[in-house]
Image (tube, helix red, strand yellow):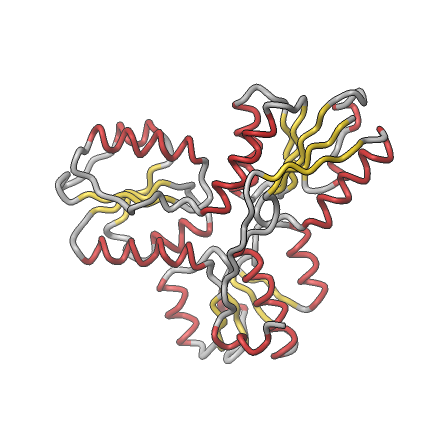
Length: 310
C-alpha cells in the first residue's frame, strides 16, 4: 500500500486563530470560558476543549451575567451580539476574518438596497450569522433548482455572496446560472470561498487521479470536509469521510492500493497521523507527501488576547 498525503491539509489560518484564541482565553481568564456553538466543526477539538474547561452553548442564557464568551470561527449575527451586550458578557470574537469579510459585503449591499443571494447550506453556523446581518435583504440559494425558483422584486439591484466553505465547482455552477438569468447581478471581485478551502479542494482533486481510495479526515458536520469527500467521489474514486482511525474499515483495502489521505480545515494533524499509523501497521504502507502549494497566512488574535500569542 502507498499513502499519498495531500498538502495542504488540515487546519487553516482561521481555525488556527480560533483554537489559539480559546487556548489563550482559558489561560488568561481561567475556566469556564463559554463558546457560542462549537469552536470549529470537529469532535476531537471540541472534546479536548471540554476537558480543558470550555463550555459550548447554543443559547446565551446559559452564560452567567458578565461571563467570558468566545464567538466561534463561523461568526454570529447582530442579534447574538445584542444579547451578549445586554448580559454584559466579556466577549472575544474569534470569527475568521474571511467570514467577517462576507458579513461586511452583505451589510454594504443591503444598505444600497440590493437583494443579496447567499449561496450556502441552510442551518450552517456561518450562513446563520451572515443572514442575520440583513435578514430582510438576503435570500438563501442552495442548489441550481433554487435559482430556477428564485423571485426578486428588482433584478437590477441584485448581488450574490457565497459561504466560505463551499465546493468551488458547485458554487461556480450556481453563480453561472445566476449570471445567465440576471445579467446585471453583481458580486465580490473574487468568489468568497476561502483560499484554504480552494487549496484543499485542488489538492484532493489532483491526488485522487492517482488514488484507488480517498480518506478525508473530518467530522460529519464540517462543510468543507464533506465537500472534499464529494469531490473525490465525483472523480470516480471511492471516498470515505472519517472522524479518525476507529472509522476506518479495513475491508475497504486489499493492501495493494494507493490511498490518498487529506483532512478538512478543522481536523487536527494528530488524528491524520493516527490514521496513517493504522495503515502502516496493518498493510506496511509507505507514505509520500504531495504538496500543491504552500500556505503562509496567519491571522492575528483578537484584541483582548494579542499579548497572549507566543
